[in-house]
Structure formats: C-alpha cells, structure tokens
Image (cartoon, rainbow, N blue to C red):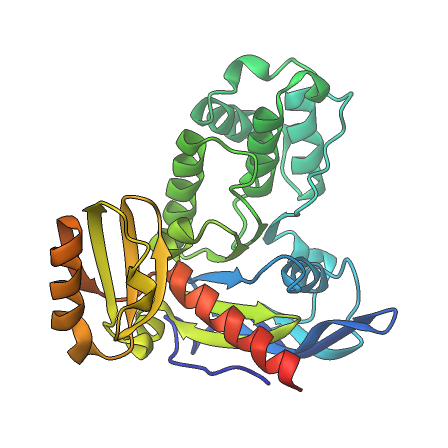
Length: 318
C-alpha cells in the first residue's frame, strides 16, 4: 500500500529533496517500506505518523546515518556528500551536545564543521542566543543548562550556518509554548528565504499552521501524501465543530454521526453525510447548551487519526 496522493505542493517541479522507493529492514522488521516523496524549494513538508511509524528512520536515511537496503535519495539533485551536508541543517530526535563544553564554544565547534569562520560564528551565534533568551549562557557549560535551554541551543546550532535544507525531527520537543511559537516563527521565516524544510511532530495544531504538504506514514508505509489544502478538500466539509455545556455522552450514537473527538467543552463531530447536519444540530440544541457551532473542514489531527486507523485496520485484515 503506497497511500493516496491528493495533489502537489508548491515547488514540486523543482525538488530539493527526492526519496524514491526507499526500503529499510532491521532484523527482519520493515521500518521503511518503499517510501517515495519529494520536498520542493521553499516548501515545508510535515512527516507525520504514530510512534514507530518510521519517521526518524527516514530522516536518518536522508542524512546517511544509516544506509537504505534499496532505493535512492537525491539532495539538490545529487547524492549526499560532505559538500552537500554543509548546506543542510539536521536536528536529530536524540539531541547530542558536548556537556562539558561551553555554549559559545559549542557553536564555534559546530559552526567550524560547516565551514564558518570564527568571527562569523560569534556574530551569528550571539544574535541567535539573544533571540532565544540565552545570551547570558554563552560562557556556561552545556551541562548547566536546563533541558529546554539545551533544546534551544541544539536548534540554534542547526540553523547557525544558514542551511538551504532543514531536516527537523520533533523540533518542538522539550519546548514551552512560548519557545514553540519562536521556533515556528523562525521556520516560517526560513520558508520566506526559500529554505526547504521537512519536519516531524506529534503537535498537529502546529503542523496544520505551517506545512504546505503532508506525508503520513504508518508502519513504514505512506498512507497519505499531498498538499494540505488538497487533503482537506478530499475529506470534505463534513466536520461539525461545537462549543457546549452539558453531558454530551449521547453524541456518538446519534444518527448521521460517524465519529467524535470530545475535548470536554469543545467537540469535533464527523458527519456521515453533509445532509445529516440539520438533524444532528436539532438533537444537539435540544440536549446541550451550545455556545458556538461551525461546519468546517476536518482538522489535521482528525485526518491523521482516520488515516492511521484505516491503515492499522487494513493491516490487521491481511
């Protein structure tokens, strides 16, 4: 199962990253199963899937941390080389910094590996440290930083050399809401600079705000691939969003309701058919105090859950 492709994102005619039919097994277990997709210039691609889906393995394959059993990877139209790596910023899932090294020394070391001059590293590094509120830590050792501060330092090191391709594995992990917003803003600023970005995340609300295209994978297989707007159009406006007060336990059993995501005071109701909307609303207004309701496209979270559930069900049936 390769998964449906429901449209193309921006820049697909000018791919910066191309994966073609990647296959990777570990001790007889298939981690990546004939996976193909591309990332265009100035495009943000969200690589989504549950834990164990193969997201991190895919990113490690791209960076040649591990080699594929078969398939090809092209970056800037070429096979990966040390020269090409200098144009890439890679944030791995498992963060790795030298704990005994001072913060600025860390940036000087990592920047030098990317061909930067010390003076440029100090200027650029100082600017980024200030932007993340870490200017006072430049002379401190990494081991003295909190987990969140170390995470911010790792992100700074990833973008320090102004790469043209960013590969970010769970970039929001370990960050508080304020710094999640900061990372999001920087990612969007990089897009405006025509940087290509691929990232994985479990925070669907942030993925929905910034991605151009989505690749969803489950058990190493692609289950959905396409532009975010195309994917939402495919699923149609069959989602009723309500804000309510009352006991809503009855909603899943209403005629015309095919699925429910209940958050306590807000709910997303998936309708079996758009023509059921009026009947469902009549039932709701008769039994709940509705503060707001809206017929809308399904959220990326619901699309994600529906596609992963469908993939899991079809896999169990084989």
